[in-house]
Image (cartoon, rainbow, N blue to C red; front, top):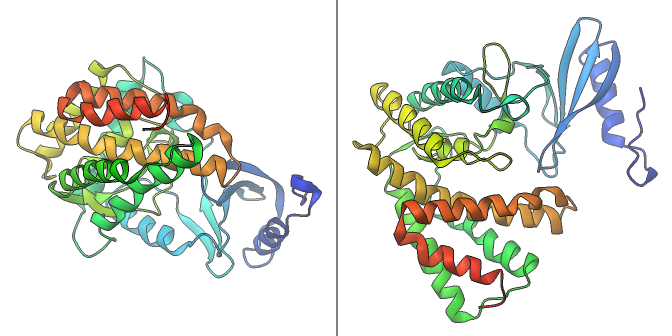
Length: 335
């Protein structure tokens, strides 16, 4: 097994330290270790084969990542009856975790038009279990400050850095007015535990599915957020009629389970549309930042998918049309 990261031909000191930790503190006789996955953060994951089986090693550099929320929220989700990887070993100071291996296939790997109904039904049920466990004062609030900070990624990174559009004072004020409306709509919703990235790439096709990953940024916020995230994903799109069918299934089951969804499906759909726009703009900003700051261009290739999601939101909620039309206009030149 190589201990060398080929980037720039420089030895990967963290990988070497992780290997020593596995052999020393964890007492594993590692037979093979290779990358399992990476994400948009600075975390890395390695699949470790050892004499007793396989596990996942997480490398989260303490300078940029904090393992403590992962450990804490894993316990909350497990207590709620959600399948998450067991934490087999930890060194929070170094930023290392040894995790149960939930398999090699995510929902994104296996989803098809034939199995999507069953897989999304199980994902909705897992989400409802998580939301039913909600209580205030446990997770950080998804408050106005955080919602606004996320939205600001769109003008800072997508408009200015990626498209080269620097808004004048009138343009900034106009856009801020829309941000205020989006945040107000989000804050009017009932609040629950929010995974914050509940999408097929973070759901494992373990048995029984889904196993849930990437939950360390969980907050206490709008009830429509996670389900909106699930069905309008960064990497796969679905016809509107199927999304409506899945939204209705979730809304009915959530309501029966005591999750504080709106009294009517129409009101819930409206919340999903407005909440979705907040997320779509945030994601466009994040993808642009990942490309221009972190040198990972592939995420931004899915920007057209999010522009299409904005069109769908405006079709469902005509009040959003002026915002969506202006965003399309910005792609043709400065405002």
